[in-house]
Image (cartoon, rainbow over all chains, first blue to last red):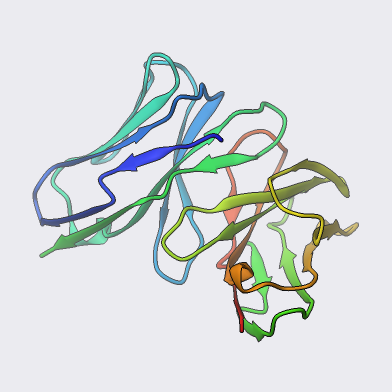
Length: 112
Length: 111
């Protein structure tokens, strides 16, 4: 069974704080995606990382792919209420399908 | 974008359900995922050029179709209580990128 474990499961912070979400697996992924999902909506793609050790920045969000391509992290600097949502990491094992293994998600609440 | 119908539906055990999805313009790959409450989505299957292109760990009573206009449907026979979930359709321009554009989902409740 391929598992992708995310931590923490829940995170409740004040506006302006920094946070990091972790995504870990024993499997090696060909790529890893981070999605954000809001209530009543489908997940929205934030970023794709492909190369081991890769770091990508999206405004206040920094994504890192582990050297062995088994783990990833998402760091948010100076969180804002608009960052509230469910953050999902998803690993792709195969090169020719979109069978993504999703983590259970990190539910982030940012209070003003 | 990706549109799904119906948005909500209620069925009873043993019934059959069909969920529909219109993919984003220019996308010829459609994937279906099941998301139980409090869980991440689980891959059901993917269709590319009307052929199944990968399947997750779901029984054969979960079946699908992709039409010439790249729209798709998911059929579930002999519904069970555990089939209650949000069913997400996602499209992409080609299979294998992992970069999916999701619809808002169809919320199925099985009583």
